[in-house]
Image 1 (spheres, helix red, strand yellow):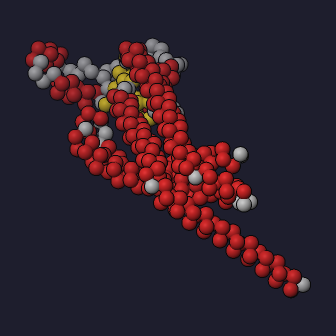
Image 2 (tube, rainbow, N blue to C red; image 1 turned 135 degrees about the horizontal axis):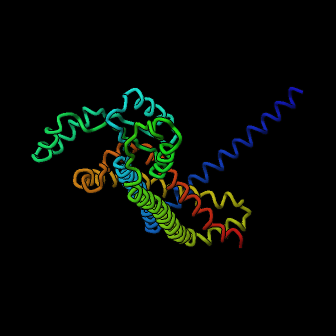
Image 3 (cartoon, rainbow, N blue to C red; image 1 turned 90 degrees about the vertical axis):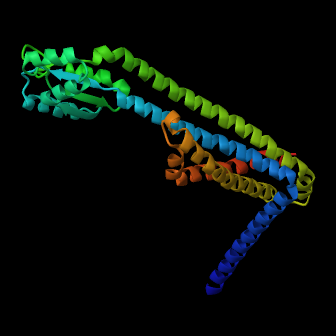
Amino acid sequence: MVKLFGTVSTLSDIVILMAMTDLKRIIKSGFINFKRGGSVSVAAVLQVLNTLAVIVVIILLQAVLYSSLNQIKDKVDVTIYFTTNAGEDKIMLLKSSLEKLPEVAQVSYTSADTALKLFRDRHVNDYSTIAALDEIGGNPLGAYLNVKAKEISQYESIANFLQGDDALVSGPTSIVEKVNYHQNKLVINRLNNIISGAQRLGFLLTLYLIISSLIITFNTIRLTIFIAREEIGVMRLVGASKMRVRGPFMVEGVIYGIIATFTILILFWPITAWLGRNMTSFLGLNLYDYYVSNFLQIFAIILLSGILLGVISSFLAVRKYLNK
């Protein structure tokens, strides 16, 4: 029994050893194919590099787009103006109710005294307005709440909440004087449509650029395999397995992807640095800071994309000659 287990163990070691030997040969053949390809291999690397450049540009453009959209979102809010006799305890109660809504991101409170000070600061050069305010004697302004939603499309839901049956905001004892949602509704709806349209357009443009780059890369790598078609035919005649034939070309595809990945990441370092110095005010985002802070994430995306692009293109391109 011991001898039997020993034999099984020996056979298992032999199978593993053979598999490792085949893998080493496949990897070595892949490097040999890459070196032997010469200018064709360089062309394939450049095409993979172009595809990865498109992906990096898309990542940066999406960062700029979302940064711009977030800046727009930050400028949109709904203001709830209270009557001058509204008690602060009731205002805080309404503030607490609003903060519990899932649509609400932030609620900020401005007291009546602060509102008066801000009004005076805004009209410091408008002497007639300041004079009229001084003549009134008291504070004609009430406190107010600024409500920011998580998404622009959610402001209507917040406005509907304020129009509900809550005793604080409806009826003869309402403490709310005005909600400016309806005055801003047209602007809010337009911004919501712009954001939705920009996101859809960005997705479609990204999809188009990636698919077109994949097709061009596939055709370039197919050219490198076309050169080796006679070698593939000979290997098939002598009984080589499909994986043994396909493996070196897939390794070659991995080499294309790795070289293109490191090249494109090095190239975009000075490019984003220049954009960060000269275009931040225009773009609304420092692309160099974004590139550096997200470098590992971008590196992982580009490396994976480059390797998959090379491997899948090689896998599909060699299939034509394996099926003959």
